[in-house]
Length: 117
Length: 115
Image (cartoon, rainbow over all chains, first blue to last red; front, side, top):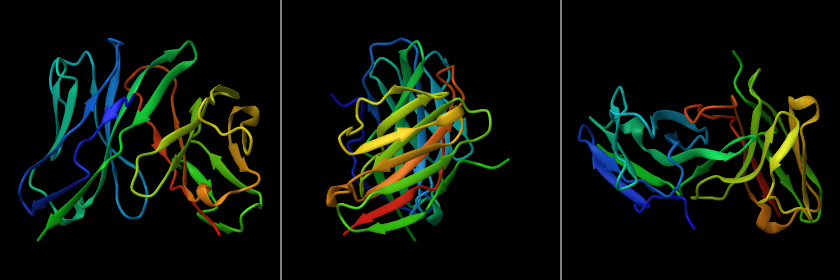
């Protein structure tokens, strides 16, 4: 079963507009972390934002914010004031307890965001 | 501070040939991951190390893939023999062990093309 689902293979947004990238996850553990990464065409994976399962407030990091709805098991990324440089693949990832040795880190299939001038 | 270093960046080999990728994680990071990323898809975990111990290799095709992390620092991933379907980007990542809030830091990857 997929642990991370990103239902939007591709998204378009006009420059300076806001966009929401969807992410739903599946876990039975009460303790987990959710991450968003950006992967531009150069291939590097860039960490954007983190949300812990026990965090009471939605995470924010500059133009990035996370709409965390725990009961729905969703962690959508909101990018405000889109810029041309935001065009990239975006991956949602989850870290959950795995075993006594540490924690696993799994990724969703990604959403390709294209920002239009 | 240096990030995760991978080499080579690109590799083109003929099928049935062996290939090896190298990764040097961030100093002090106990956890090391190898992922395979096919074009247009998310990274898929191949193997995870905690120090020198492989604690999750359930997705590693063991008939042709092998990995090692001697002394719990740098790591090598090997494919022998390579098949056409192995063409992908191989990503190495490292993190501190412990809490759910520890992000993984990625290298720039090795793009493998098998012809």
